Amino acid sequence: MIKYITIFFYLIFLNVSATEYLKFNSTDQKFPNHSEVLVEISFPKKTAGKLPLIITQHGSTRDGKKIQDGATDEYSTRIIKEGTKQGFAVAAIDAFYKKPVTANEKTRFPDALNYANELRKILIKDERFDKERFFYTGFSYGAQQVLKTIGAPYNNNNPNAWKAVASAEPGCNLFQKPVKLNFPVLIIKGEESHYYVEPCRILEQELLKEGNKVELVNIPKANHFFSTKGEIVQGVAVNGCRYDPVVRMPNGSFRLHSGAEISRKEARKKCFTKESGKGKNRKKLNEAVNLTITFFKDNLN
Image: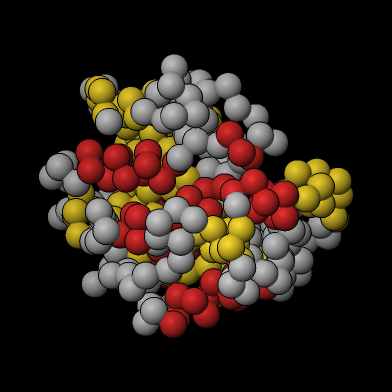
């Protein structure tokens, strides 16, 4: 439930015409005493009529631009730059804002889709934005939040929320059982990612079975961070269900894609590994960003 919304204010920058900051409270069971969410909204230099809006969600590491006393990641930073250049307004959510959580505490990450959905409900009332052209994207943890939109629990309550969604480097080791969607889906993977492409190919086929429009792009010679010359190292990752991902059913239960029932505890044990990745020269990141913005532009009408 939203408790309050701050008043917008403007700052003028060279790369965009204006940037606004918004704070609202959104309850989260994992962080009952840290409900404040910070958002930065960037606008294109030239505007004509109501603006299409991209909501973008950072990954587990906020390694991009600062947002007041918060931050976003490099993917969202470049989505802001390219999106505003192409005529979109872009809203970047800091889901970790003032929350006691670190990048490695993956089971404690907040429900950022809920934040994005509440932000959408706030901004569709703003006459500057075209409520029929809202888009959603994110990287890594943010990409997994984007993929929560494909299941019945979300779509039963929000059937026409998005014009299109783009998920950049999701794990796909655990995904919602897809339903028929009213929007197309783009999934972008790095060919050399430690979050392997196989479960995303399985998800692609499950989406197609429901009659959805979905595109899976695998960028050559790119790791999880859309960088070249990456390495597999010891760390924490949800990538152990490479060939038999876990599917969350509409009633909240879990099954392996192969059909066997599995508990939440068993799913975590099966899917969590200590095989991570490193390497952030980001030579392929602009390619992923451009794929996302082009996909959204192709689905404006």
